[in-house]
Length: 183
Image (cartoon, rainbow, N blue to C red; front, side):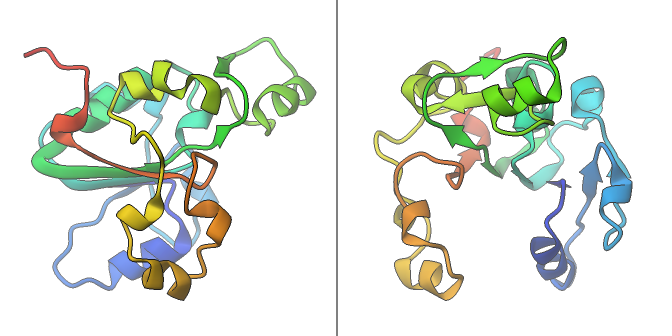
């Protein structure tokens, strides 16, 4: 499952023979290069089937979803197979967490969240009390622990994006890593 598919990742995965690859977005028309199915995470996340996906990918999606992101994460984790992984990126900004689902104009959204179509921001100063309550965060973010440095060089990942929580941080979460469980 790939939400808001990036063209390069989409094209690469589509070339892998035998892979069942489903792509979704709130506005499928924004992706003319792909057969994107409509999905409103704020209204339909509970409809995603359980124990279905080996991999869920989303990058810079959660800051756009006008509902409690913990609920969306819960349903995405529920939809993973036992050995599945969720790979995602969320912009992490300086300062503190903030959200607002309505009642502010575009200028205020840009001021508070960095972009007119964002409804929340995750702040580095209270990351443990937001994302850290959903899944374990490393004490210190270091992308080279996930990807060899020579691969990061080959794919032109800049040095500033490799360490410290930022808008470039990539997270990999297994099904069992999610802290909200009913067991």
